[in-house]
Amino acid sequence: MHFYGKLVVAPLNIILYNVISGHGPELYGVEPLSYYIINGFLNFNFAFFLALVSLPFLMICTLVFKWSAHRSKSN
Image (cartoon, rainbow, N blue to C red; front, side):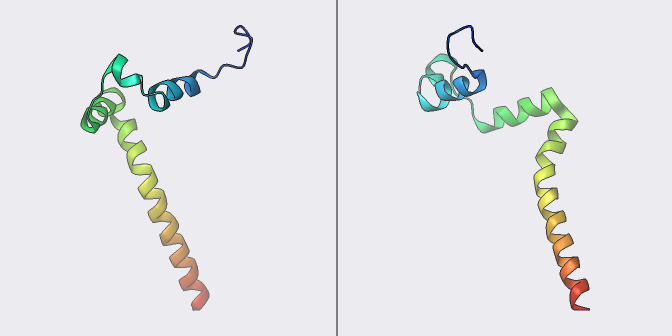
């Protein structure tokens, strides 16, 4: 981090270059969303599926727990 004489955060620099500067597509190209979904399944198979399902599952569980707590208070 200190070799360059300033604070360097590599993931932030990648995002700034590819998203903010607009030069990213010229260097690496652009792929459709389906490419990234298929690539995620090929590289991380079951773990990728669990990661995709986790957020909706968490929201459903939160709603069910709030609903059951509200229902038990009213009885």
